[in-house]
Image (tube, rainbow, N blue to C red; front, side, top):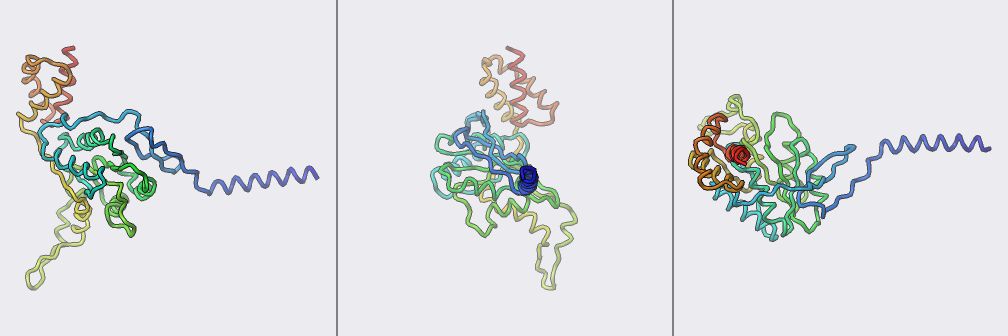
Length: 288
């Protein structure tokens, strides 16, 4: 009898192991007080919010020569954290001009009022419905941050983002906004062949092709568009001076750095804010 019972237990354990293999893994608990910023991660095919132990400390005052963009995103974010209507935001334009930094500055300015940032990689955008379900009903206000966003033909995240913005049958979650940055205004590549779908009818009316309409429809779902442009030389030097002062350089040292700063930008083919910050770190580090 004992032998039969042992065999029964072994068969039962084997059956349980097979059942457990097809069941979804248990959801991971989320520590909402661990940080003001989170990253969406996957473990055993289960998504969870990973707290960022040291979120980037960027202030609005550190971002120079983008006053109009700062004012617009600050006002939009203020409305959001105060529970007023606000828009999803798309920041597009020249690289290194402060698009991502501006979103991080929003967190620094409004974290004390309940703003939280969730960074989501482009490859995980199809998980947006799960993220929104996860934070629905929470008292905090969440900005889903998608950095350097662009899509190639056939990528699944494209349609998932469209649905999350305003295309779902369910109501839009009122404590979530999406802030995205991109070097492309329309997020999808545009090709000469797309123009082949335009045609004239007998009355001469122009009918845009469905391919083109599909490519621009995602951008139109963002209520607020902020455009960023390359900096002029004086703007670039002003940003260099700001960061050198932040790193403890004196006024004469900042003045002496002008020629080297221009050389640094020429070597990199860009006068962006990022290049200015990188030069300031190098120059101040050598002085110290």
